[in-house]
Image 1 (spheres, rainbow, N blue to C red):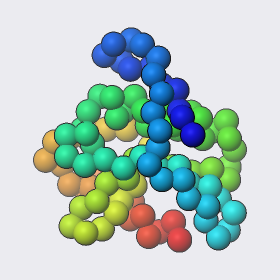
Image 2 (cartoon, rainbow, N blue to C red):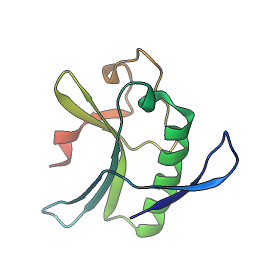
Image 3 (cartoon, helix red, strand yellow):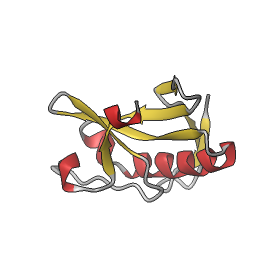
Image 4 (tube, helix red, strand yellow):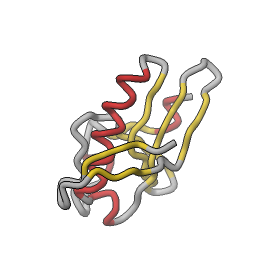
Length: 104
């Protein structure tokens, strides 16, 4: 599944393909894109997640998703419509990052 987004640097429409599509036992569908290092902090990632959040709204309440990162062996996700992640920041420094296991 490709998600159309506008790259704010090039001002061009592009597609990205989220890494994980998960069907939860309660019927929800999760769409997540994994990141690490400088890809978690890039403007392009913010562009992608903002587009993904808009797409999830169109899909309806049974769809969730966002950016997923691993820190200290634990996966976290951010489903905020206004994504930001600063270099050197810990996911524990922001209320926007939640343990992935909370979704199960």
